[in-house]
Image (cartoon, rainbow over all chains, first blue to last red; front, side):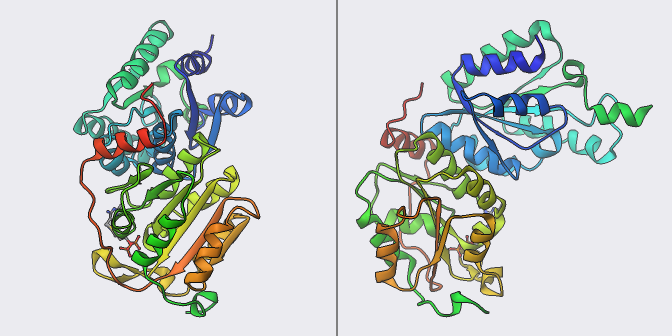
Length: 174
Length: 199
Ligand SMILES: Cc1ncc(C[n+]2csc(CCOP(=O)(O)OP(=O)(O)O)c2C)c(N)n1
C-alpha cells in the first residue's frame, strides 16, 4: 500500500471527511484520490490560512477535517494557528509535504522550511515527521485519535524519505 | 469613487446587525469577523449559534464555508468588514466554486480600517466588493440600498440560489458590544448551539 492510501484509510477510519488543500506536487495523488471519493468533501482553497479557517468551521459544525499543504504554505498559517486553532482548541489535522530538504533545488524552499518546526514548537503544536511505511499507520492513527480526544492540533510532516520527494527536484539534480 | 456604491444609502452596522438578528428564525449560524463585525453581533444579543472570531483577520468567510459545508440544512451567515474581505478575496472564488446554497456573506463596507485608525481601504477608493463577488462567480451579489431593502434581501436571500453576498455601505462608527475573550468557551457554546458533539 502506498503512503497516501494508508493516510486516506486512516483519515476515513477516524471519520475525517472534509479535506481542504492547496496543491503540492507530492500531494497530487492524495488530492486526486480525495476528489474522486464521495466520502470526502474536497475543498480547493486559494491560500493555506483560508484552508485552516474552513477546516475549523467544519470541525465546529460536526464534520472532522484535515488540511493538506506544502512547507511554503505552512509559512502562511502562523497567525491562523496562533489566533484560531490553538486558543480555540481546534483538533486541526495538518498534513505538510516537506520541501526544502534532501535534494531541494529552490533556495527559497530551503529557507522557509527552517521556519516550520520552530513555529510549531513555539506554538506547542505536536508534530511528527513521517519517514517510513513501517511506523506510518501507528503514528497517524494514534496521533489523530489523540488530537480529537485531547482537543489539540497535530502536524504530520511528510518527509521525502516517505514520499520520494518532489519529482521536479530529481529532474533538477540530474 | 464610482459605481453603485455611490448611489446607495449610508447605513449603520449596529442597527443593521440588530435588524438581521431579529429576522433569524431558524437557528442560523452567524460568524462574526474581527473587531467591529463581532462587537455589533454581540451587541444584538448573544445567540447560541454565534461564533466570535477574535484575531484571525479575513477568516470569517472561510470559517463560515466550513460550517455551511458541514451542515447544509442550516443557514449560515458571515459578517465581515471590507478590509478583512480584501485580505481574503481568494475565499470568494473558493466559495463560488463550492456553491454552498445555504451561505450568505454580509460585508460592512465603511471604506476604512475603522478599528486600527480609519485608514482608507481600497473599497473607499475605486474597488467595488459586489463586482468582485460577481466576478468570483457568486450567483447573487447585491448592494443594500437602504434598511427596507436590507430586510427584503435577508428574507428572500435564497430565492435565486446561493451563495449570496450582500454589501452595505456603512458609516465610520465603531461597534457597540464587547464579547468575553474566552476562545474555548466561545467554541464550546457554538458547537452546542449547532448540535455538534466533540466526537
Ligand atoms: C493579519 C492581520 N493583519 C492586521 C491586523 C490588524 N487589524 C485588526 S482589525 C484591522 C482592520 C479591519 O478592517 P475591516 O475589516 O474593514 O473592519 P473595520 O475595522 O473597518 O470595522 C486590522 C488591520 C490583524 N489583526 N491581523
